[in-house]
Length: 443
Ligand code: FAD
Image (cartoon, rainbow, N blue to C red; front, side, top):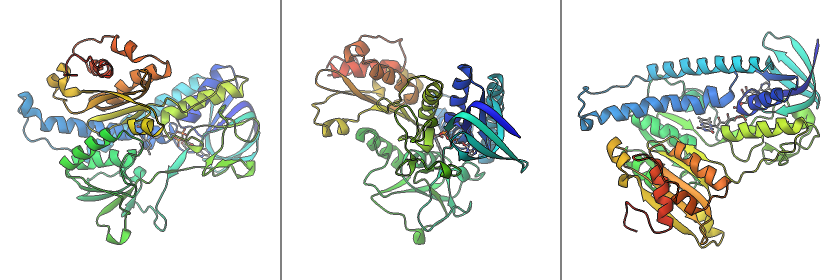
């Protein structure tokens, strides 16, 4: 049996399904091959599951402060098994909705493991064991990534866990060691410390959260310290001394299984792509974690759209200049563009504007006073980066990304007045602070 398509997408995560939908919107006959669940890591084992759990732990923390809001609700407790059950229910619902959306776009979903035989020829081992040959003019590879382990160790779902395993734990461990102080490790440190686990983070590099503004990291460390999380930077994890469960969050490995026959050019462990998302083989594109310099779902979405358009005759490019980052600690972190340190290292004479959330009326009213907004500009006022730690930081950073992407000046941000009382006032005030004229702090 053979099936012929204009575009075949291998992998149904954010990169793959975005590519498939855009190709279908452009009128192509499209097939999407997925061996597991639609939505990939992001929906099933990443962004959404972690946020579903964090929604519960954040609410639990809020309940712990209920007395200060005049509410007596007794001593709150949290049941991790129920938190996981809620997470699984909502993930299943979103996966089902996504399947409906893909079908509405008249994309054929092929449930099976795809192996590339030649650029326009894929053999799929269907979930029932039979084989299907799929032929297409254009191929978009979106096979994602898998958790990396430490040399000499392997994930056993008991002593050594990966993030997939941690998202299924129904009881918080009394003690947990987290190896890796990157975004994923810090997410789990925030979750388990709130659940009452004794958390130790090992980070081999001199600092946690590489690439995040130094002042933001300093505040994260103070908050972790307050939650009794031990942060050991510049320290390699020694398995011989590990006690309790160990969660290994040392990065992810691009998934290139089934692509071998293509002989693709590689960039370290990732598939090499041009700025048009085309691989070294003409007509074969790659998107998302399998090729990306930044492993984020919104990067995968955008790359998927760019690849689909180019596969169908478009001329789009993808660049990494303005990528917003969200970290869902409590309070949240949002970042886009250059950090102060990176700007100084480039020899730029930087100008900084910083505004503390504590000086905003809304923060006081909501009891969310920790954190700040920080603008990094050059001497002419060009916005180079924005760094936020505080309430709704992951949403606020969207406005900052819009400003940087569209070359808005610091005056334009300062003069766009915001509704009162609201958190976006923090952005406006920090922009005013660059110009030494913030209203609610002494400049
Ligand atoms: P994936 O999501 O990995 O999807 C690839 C798909 O391809 C999978 O479904 C896989 O089954 C399928 N596949 C692979 N090989 C084959 C084959 N041969 N045949 C058929 N199917 C195949 N990013 C954010 O932007 N924000 C966040 O808050 C965030 N939180 C995260 C939290 C955690 C714990 C983790 C692990 C990741 C998080 N990420 C987050 C990263 C995000 O999940 C990934 O960047 C994103 O899922 C990458 O999308 P993708 O389409 O490239 O690949």
